[in-house]
Length: 64
Image 1: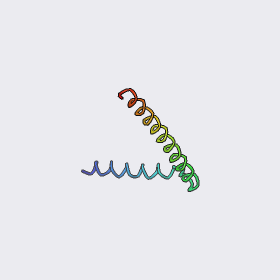
Image 2: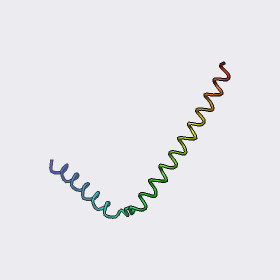
Image 3: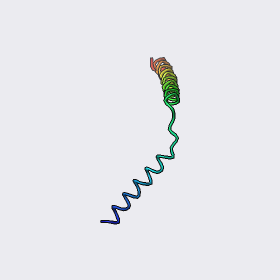
Image 4: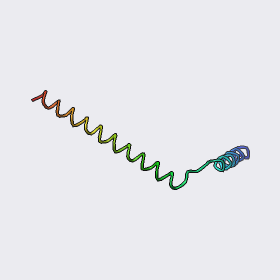
């Protein structure tokens, strides 16, 4: 049981060490990237919604 405990402790220590090396983004960068992701997501949703509407309209013309 002692070996398993040492592995867990060593893993947690290594994870803590690695987290200290991380360069965290600033608040300004986080807000900027979040807005970019939301903007791209809205664009893709509108594009796919438009394609869905177009294909539904074409399909309804073919069926009727």
